[in-house]
Image (cartoon, rainbow, N blue to C red; front, side):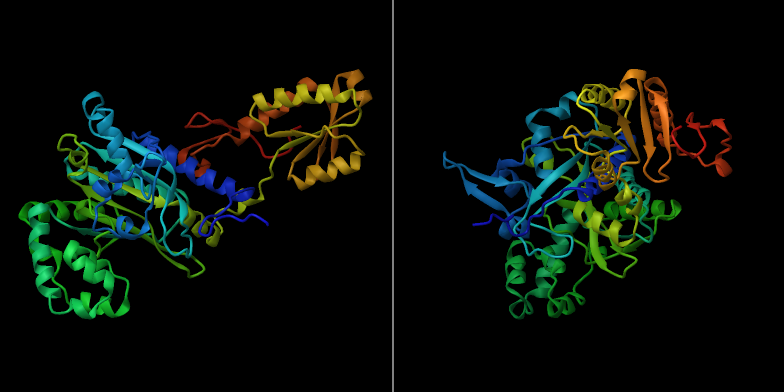
Amino acid sequence: MQSRNVKGTKDLFGKETRQFQFVENIFSSIAESFGYQEMRPPVLEHSEVFVRGVGEGSDVVRKEMYTFLDKGERSLTLRPEFTAGIMRLIVQNKLYATETLPIKAYYNGPVFRYERPQLGRYRQFNQFGVECVGGTSYFNDLETIMLGYCMLSTLGLTNVTLKINTLGDEASREAYKAALKNYFADKVEGMCEDCKDRFNVNPLRILDCKVPEDQEIVKGAPKMSDYLSEESKERFENILDALTQMEIPYEVDDTLVRGLDYYSETVFEFHYTSKKGVNYGAIGAGGHYSNLVKEFGGPELEGVGFSFGEERIVSVLNDDELLNELNEEGEVEFYICPICEEAKEAALALSVSSRMMGARVDVNFEGGKLGAMLKKAVKKGALYAIIIGEDELNKNSLQMKNLVTEEQTELTVSEYLDAIKQMQEHDHECHCHDDEDGCEDGECCCHHHHKDEGDLN
């Protein structure tokens, strides 16, 4: 019997792996520029971590968790999201007492939810997200939204729609829940089974219903804005004013409540429709929470965070053709071809020196005719083939063949390594633009050294 991957999971290899690495590297770099450091909670947690953290009223806990008993009859769960695990980590390790507040953490890895596979959504998928724990100012909410918006903008995504709402403080939410129960009391019997459950557990969840007929009923429901305390109203207005000043476009969505029970005050989603017209809905989302740390036995610390579904991000980038250059990049830059047995040891030594200078190098140790080796080099997307034979060994030299122009040049090993050094300096990222930031030939304002385009030699 041929083995196949589990439904709702996806193998990643080749250029797809590079695409995920590209997104993760950009997200990590930007998060660190905002003062965040990586945390890595385990994939497996005691089930109560998610029941307490995510909330029994959420669809994640009620229907989507992968939960099982281990050999010790303990209930364990594959993480369906990161936030609860991060809170458990902070409390268990008493980071609230040993670290400077707010604690700023970012994370990246697989999560597991038993749901219907659909566009950009799998039962095992990857999340990148952040948590800022221990700050009370609305500026923490604001900066977190800015961080997410910055990440998407840096990837080249334009026309991102930020949808935002407030769930208010605890008093505001309790007053609003009472109003919702009163509104839906004589309507819920005609709604879906999920809404009937939500009515008793958490009526806020009804606002998130995706059934078209129920959505029509939801349109007439009371609005959260009518039940906000003065403090929550002022907090939300301050955030909206600041978003306007920073020219971050947004839409206030009164029905936005998010699918997890721990949120309070600000909640938000980043929505996107690709240039191909594919509506991906929310490609990232998050919000503020007030009681999560306390729920896990820690002090009363507020927090805010968000996460991106990496599969959706990568899919959007491909739709908008923003990964074309990355997709065209070869597996290696240099493919070394020793054309005699004696040259293999020299080829190995040369590959080590090249890699230590930052080059991506592969070596053909299998032998064969040079033509066959060059075909392999082209298939791997190499820019240059490095050819070493008896003559080259005797002269401590090599032949470097440009696989695009087919120009071939003889270089000493020292000249070759100098050429690699020049290539790495040239490829080093520069954030300046000659016409905008006063960069001229040579050293520029960001201390990168600009070189002319061209061959290594």
